[in-house]
Length: 453
Image (cartoon, rainbow, N blue to C red; front, side):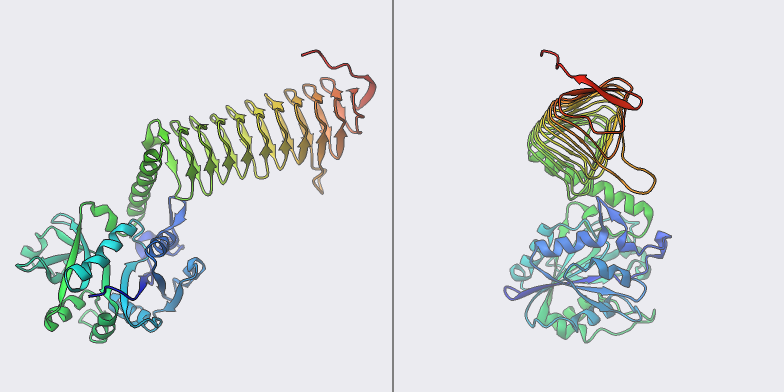
């Protein structure tokens, strides 16, 4: 019936989630890098639905995730039907489609909601359910169909007879409903003997009025499953991450041993990238085309250019331009910026520093709060002493400088262009361009003669 008009989504998130055994509200628990509720709201946005989020006083911290949704409080929580009645008070639209979703059903796909909305018109229905075969021992309400295939009843599992429990088709709790009809029918919902108002009683109201209730039967029952325990949370995370990997593979990314790697929902990966065993890509990470990650790398909120290699290393809050090589066993901390062609070898660490084009730092060194020029060689064991116990200070190294092994650079200090330090130097004063500094503390002793390359 609902062929045109507005689209709204009533997202029910007032439950306490006590089975999670957590101080954190259930729908704030993350899967694939985002809270459950955030995935649901993303799905609402993908189908063009204005979201109305129903919370309770206990779940009100979820308001921070509303992301533009209208928030209403259900006090006290008295069941799903009551939650919809409360939500409708915040809906100004008179005609169109209302989706009803739970805040923990993060696996529902936008395509499924679009199909359910289309069913209203195709079947001349006032309501369309999302269903799937859940087996005879599932905890969801059973769907009883009539001779024409339309829904006659939904029987809650706790009230079902032995014969009804053997029905495999289960109601998964997502609905597309004609909005004008919902306004009228929701007013007839009443409290039952449990002290709750059941949304599923809408089916009985529709049948009494002679209206049609359709069902969209999924081939994948996981899509409609909610999260009530940590076990179900882990299962939902695994399902969603499998989908994410498959989407990237279909877009031209190669995963070696896909099940061993984890990719968050917000990660972008370019074509021809290679993700090796045991790699974890989190947050807002971007990986350029032709880049190789892993094996066993952790990349979090980091932008990586094209043609890079990140082997067995940890990168967080960093930026890599094209053709940068990292690892094995390197660590980039927030603020690290490596320009094109930089090489960072085993046990190198960079924090809040920029290493410019073609600089090399191959072994056992730490560079923090620094600006390193182009084509600089940083010898093994080099450390920038950036913290004096009170404040951080910066180190500057000019282009084509050579930093000898085991050099200590006590910031603030500047190594001039083309200058060099001897092995074991402790540099406490600026080194002029082109000079060689040696000793403890280091002294500039002569002009440097760069070796021929």
